[in-house]
Image (tube, rainbow, N blue to C red; front, top):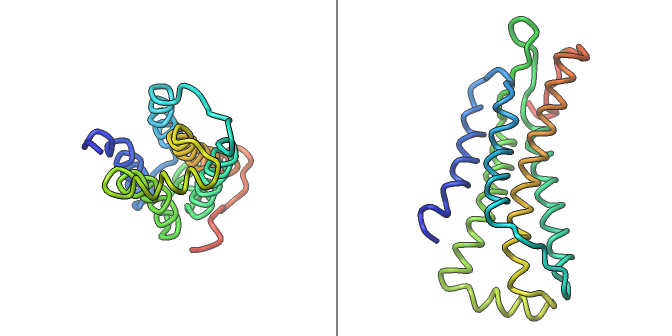
Length: 173
């Protein structure tokens, strides 16, 4: 993998880690990660393979990404700030879930390119997959992880600001 291949993942990690300090839940905190993965998906995701068990792999990766994103949103503290504006602060579990999701994709890609390619190929063949399924599966996993987190934060911020739900925080403080 070239250094440029790591850049989107690093950007996504930094976007979340930037919220370790409480920040106003602004529109860019929701839309910037979506823009990053949207551009990547537009550049790299041309078709979704469906032969063999490819669709099953894509669904499993997509659902996993969405679940990780929603968990990250749940473990992010959202609370009223000055003027009733929602504020967000990434909790320890939110950071862990996010880094595990992004890190697992990076680790898999590095493993596949740096010596583990034969093992990935054997797994692929043994499970009725095609090599062409891995890229779209991982891209959709990243996209849905960001959608889950951004959507969850937007929903919680909306509930905080518009619906006046009071202090909405994650179950783990």
